[in-house]
Amino acid sequence: MAEVNLTAAFSTVPAAEAEEIKRVIVETVGQIAQEDGTFKRAKLVFTESDERCGLTAELDGVKKEGVPLQLDLEQLEDAKTSAGARARTRGGGAFVRCA
Image (cartoon, rainbow, N blue to C red; front, side, top):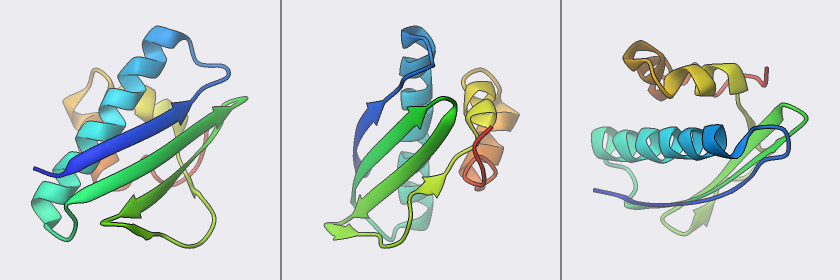
């Protein structure tokens, strides 16, 4: 199992929902690591401000270049409770745009 460390900052999402979103992100990246097998450690930074959000990652000590990946906050919120939404998140669906 991969080691996944997440640092997250939220401005408009309530604390309880923020914890669930963080859990979904960590679980999703862990599942990707397990299925893909291309990295053992992930350091993630997630930011949300006025419902705009992004994710940057360092995998096995290598920082991924480019702008932060934009995330669809609505899909992340749905993924907290829906197995189908979690599958779409893992498949990259949530990692397309901010809601």
